[in-house]
Image 1: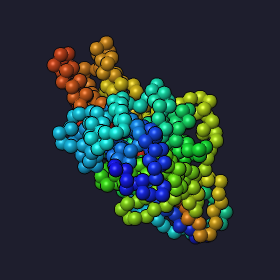
Image 2 (image 1 turned 120 degrees about the horizontal axis):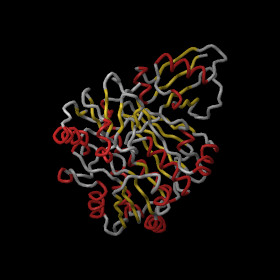
Image 3 (image 1 turned 90 degrees about the vertical axis):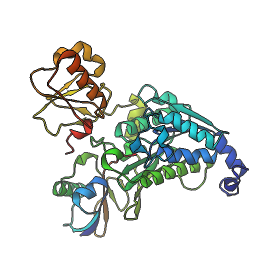
Image 4 (image 1 turned 180 degrees about the vertical axis):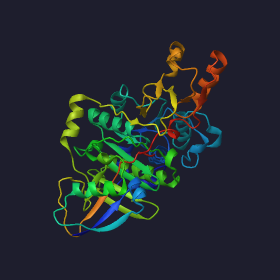
Length: 78
Length: 337
């Protein structure tokens, strides 16, 4: 199942991209995807990173073909 | 008339202007976000505005905190802002609070205002604002910046989600605009968006950004609004236990060296390492014996200024020849991974 992954803040910097399309095997959960990307891009402090699926930060969602998944770290600047 | 151009709007009118004149807003941090927010809220005639900042104006603030002038360098931000903003509007009450927000003063202070505006640049204070707003039952308007990106939301508004609902797990990666770099326009825009949310709340107009998080990247023009989930347990734990202090811990990037941390114990981030001797400047007199004299010791504080004084003093008065100041303070020695 193909989906669009978006990265924000520092994650976009470590991934060196703000968006990419991934083809994942079916049954992949949000947590599986997070674990995979955390390892791939060495995302710091993964516990603090929030995941939105189709612009929804509710964490209990399943992934399906065509979803848009966002990786959101906390920011603190002002 | 001063407010004619906004009273003409259906959303404002004479009754809306009346609401604004009776409203009160506390701005925490009069910096990149707080300055523009304050300017427009003062202009709009919000009746009472508190300006809280314990910092002083520095030259590197001026590119984004355009309320201040070169002649203000070294002066209290809260006092300078109060004086300048009072010139913009003498009909409203502006209160300068030259203190840092703390667990001790937050809730009591928040009870004196209707809405809190977060103009801070660190996670500790954001969680503190969140918790105190839950206890004092006040909405707060949040914004944070990372380089060209910003986040915006209204928390604790009419039973809506809180900051802990968005980020239940705290992070040690405190990154201020000083550390990452930022174009002044970015906090400028977000500060004004915060002011707009406040006007909407006071006027009861439009859609308040509660239960949602707005993300904008001003460099590539992309924008998203994410739906937020309320986590009751994150709100209940504050109501039951009170404010939960956030302690940010960091590691030293080069722990082959020996360090002396002379910051007071409330200053963050804290360093967890055996290679760091922690003696707050206020205790130095009694604890000098703890500092080794034979090994090289790197002395640091938040910015490098106090530690320089300490190094010079200990060298001149007590013969410590082995001390070196960490120029630029703690940010230059902590590890980012």
